[in-house]
Length: 335
Image (cartoon, rainbow, N blue to C red; front, top):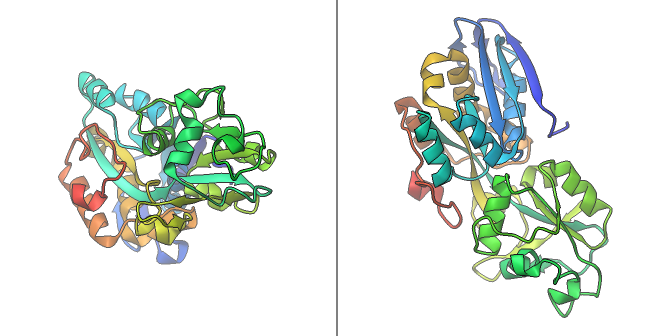
């Protein structure tokens, strides 16, 4: 599966009948007319939307779902301009984006959809970087490191004198925003002399072919390419070296790089477009959680899923993060 190509799916049948045999719900959703669902945003959330849409199409071919990938920031620009129905995001909406949506009269429902763990990856030939601290990553990626920290031995005296080359998402990415804040502590500020791409496959290819390479990406992309890459354990707040996995992401021990990921749904689309409402309800249905696991992410616990459904059913608008960060924040506490 190519996780970065735009997806155009044509769906038919007026009645959505989804069975647990094909990974879907056994409930029925009536979509009375043909409809179009426009989605854009995070490359991290893309595999979830893609997998859900592929199953959703089995029972509803009258709905056309278009999924684009322009990063969380790029997605919010389109969403707040009224160009899309759903914005995929790997971090909460920023205050500036909230203001832009308000200026354009766009109300939205914030829908946490899964947990992710940003995975720090190195080349298979790297036998020295087995565990890193957040401060080690900060030393590599800080603005002050540009043109200065170019060798692994500058990160740790015990590391070999090998060239250090970095690969990561571009500045429109929510993964970029979260990683920078979690490791450097500065919002939106990172060294600029690294290979940046909204295409995670570019990051994978770069690290795979570069023995001194280090990159970071969503857990699903590591899972898809773990035969080519090696995940680095991260020292958490308890001083333990923890690798990303479904278990460590779900229990929060993979810290500080575990995070919730989101859908932002235009409220008017929920009330006026039956296709949008049906597709969002399908994505948060616990019966479809295994699709989230299958693409490499961690489903929300049942108690959180229930609160998310309540927000959607009530049409609760705004962000529980109020324009702030989700770094170090427990989603259950916010909900």
